[in-house]
Image (cartoon, rainbow, N blue to C red; front, side):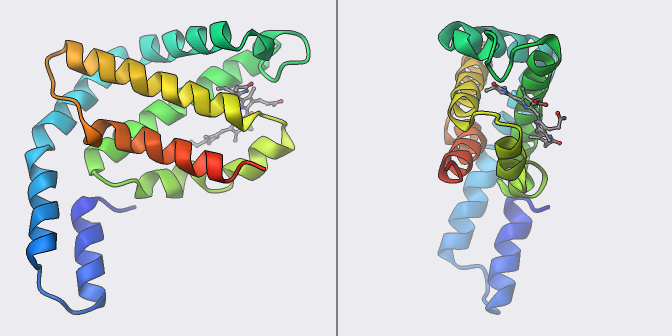
Length: 169
Ligand SMILES: CCC1=C(C)/C(=C/C2=NC(=C\c3[nH]c(/C=C4\NC(=O)[C@H](C)[C@H]4CC)c(C)c3CCC(=O)O)/C(CCC(=O)O)=C2C)NC1=O
């Protein structure tokens, strides 16, 4: 599992380079967003259960067929599994946000996920919609708390969405 600094050092060490202008710019941006990343994590931590619940309600409102007979989130067990997955996405997105690196998502969340979802007929499209809703709610709440939002905040969600969408068949 890597963060922005260890990733950068790893890349430069591989080719035996000193930290050049590019590297310094990346490091600067990582440290400049440091306080915002930590404050955003605190906002998410204080609202995680509510965020997941709200995102779930919004998802099922937009795509009610998911919770109707025949839908993948139909039955209490599968409904709960779906919300639990949303909670995983939120928690790991927060880790990635603090780390300034999406490596933790590849390693802990995305690996093997497509196979699991396909084998259980969990639909990827609606999952991606759910992650997008989480992202929007997080952005709203972080902004409401007076913490600057930006690329640092969206990047983990974008990464999950991009990777999941790409592996959709
Ligand atoms: C930390 C990394 C991690 C992830 C990401 C993860 C996902 C994950 N989601 C699962 C199931 C599931 N996931 C969903 C999710 C949904 N169904 C829908 O219609 C919605 C679109 C969506 C919610 C947004 C559902 C309903 C199941 C249960 C499927 C079943 O058992 O039939 C399963 C199968 C085993 C289980 O039920 O626990 C895994 C492994 N597990 C992990 O350890």
